[in-house]
Image (cartoon, rainbow, N blue to C red; front, top):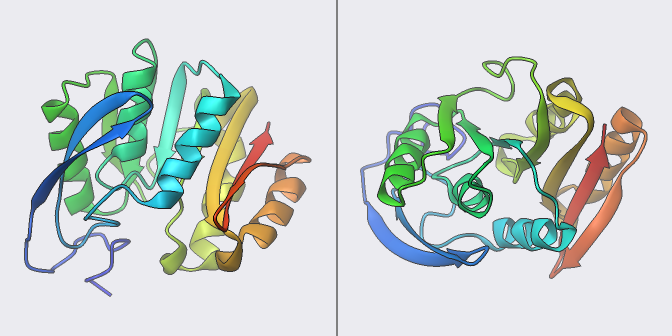
Length: 200
């Protein structure tokens, strides 16, 4: 298990690489490593989630990226919304170290990077946007914990955006979000990926 991207401390031999990727109109440079999710490129699910957020034309002030990995989602949003405060959390210490390095390399200052297993180290607070490309391989219990726990960390009217593949649990996630929030919309479908949105 220590080799998986959802482990606290991956033990895979280091194999760093660096690439550039354009997200939300910004060209960002990322350093990745073995033992983190989608280390060779920004994964299609994350890009689909950002497309949905761009179409929503929202202007969030406090953003939480749960399961941030090496940082593509949180850093893209922080660059897009420079007046916002973005918290990026993950359980994987190697991924978090990379997220901090990537924030520095891209001169993104309005981010905080913290280790947290789900919301364990996230205080109940006033986020108006929570996003997640959840760690599907960690299992349904972990994914559903991220979705169900979001309500305790959103302001009234705040929104949760989630990206999941249909074949990896999007329908059951939609049911859970409807039960938790009383609402859930599929705001984008793209190549088998669903972006789900619930409002508190």
